Length: 235
Length: 235
Image (cartoon, each protein chain N blue to C red):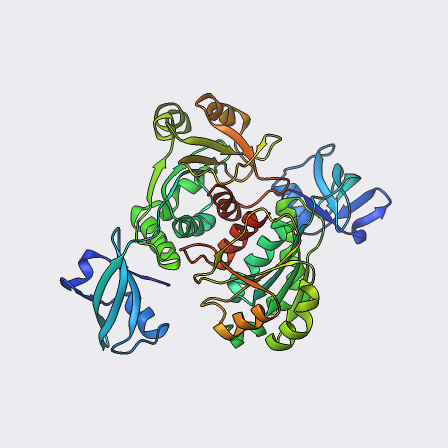
């Protein structure tokens, strides 16, 4: 937790917060904070700054908050991911949030196992929990938006053309296509397939709406490795 | 497992292997292979190619092996990592192997917790197990070499100057230094700190032997995200 993320509900007056949950535990056990200590904080979807510890009680911590810094620039990237297996999904939420992605679509594809769709991790409250961990890790306050789309074809034909309009549109696919561009410095929509990849018909559907197919080289990377790898290339 | 990694001991004649371990289970359960099927294989530290399934018995699988392709080019990067916590270390071994890193040093630093050094994951056989998973994921055969160094000062003053001679030498450190260079196209030694980072004295020791300190931007990334991110930038 390199930043303690605050919410409106934490405020007990305009410049003071009281925390009683896992953040309190973290402040006590990891920061080993004492009265007077300064901690890095940020208000969700707002500014970042510092908080001075005022009181450490058994069941709460009170801090005086001073917010004066903008959060890091959002990445102008929309990620479209085939729903990963739950174990991977948890880390992907954190990873994506820590990298500064603010828009993500989780979609169905031919090779996504049906059972993945019943994961409790897809509940909005579970998604937010993981995203918060990513923001706290990376020192950011802007909450990513995650959209869940269970039907591939209507999403790609009806919704995705609007999302990708005016942006660079890329499909990452291990095949003898073009290599991934570098430092594009413009908005981009990036589609990434499941384990085993998109099927050719899906790649074709994306080509039909203007997506360019690119590869990441000879090596096949796990999604959680491929995501930072490709983001680092693009921006 | 995008490639089945073979070892000399698997051969029962010059072109035939017999597998009876988790690779057999994978071939049966995940590939759902039948006699005659072709699978992607590679010989550890040797060539890649295909194997035709000859026989699927209850307790073994026999395949005829044809190796004709070189593995992907190794990355000319030596990673020097402060020993991560065991849970992270397991994934780091896989990640590093999948990205094509072939030389890695695990070192002690001020902020590495002492308890991490007693992890069973540091046994050579455990390290190799995780590295194999990374090679199988990415389709590579060249086994990375992992070196464990428990003492920071002698490593940095006596051994690291030799390792980094003639190479670009970088320390990743979140601070107002230069940004990470891109596409360096030359050998590099990269030092990365533990959670919480190197202490200033450690950064100074690295500066003293010619390491340039670079940062990855505003966001603080977990090691397993930072490693692919920085490798993608450098190469």
